[in-house]
Image (cartoon, rainbow, N blue to C red; front, side):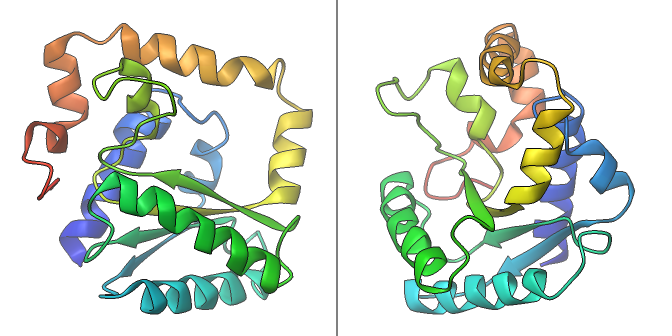
Length: 186
């Protein structure tokens, strides 16, 4: 589990923060307010239970302690299609738990693919991570960050341009897990 957390931290530092894909991640990361929880759940039900416990934890923890949580999935949902289908269950959990409008869950996966894109489209790199990840985000934090940021709607397009500008060597450097077989993205 230490290796998994290290890989996620390295991705955060080098890609998410280092390439400024999320202009709001640096401060909470430097302040130790990003929780990384590694799930070894072997079934979707067990993973939903782990997600629920993380939502309950962040719900009762002030943002000054835990601003956001990354739930890293190590045992299941290796294939992106299965992961993507699981996001429906995540939305259902948010709704049933009364967390809709309080939290949202952003998705990251080693094989991430936006609808209508080809698998090798550089834009997909914006959401490619070393492991499948469910990112729990406080809605009020998003609202606060976006209100202070000029042209937040331009962030996705800027990120895609950043990914498109990477040379093949830079892609291998920033995303070393992508060169490995899809069955074992690590």
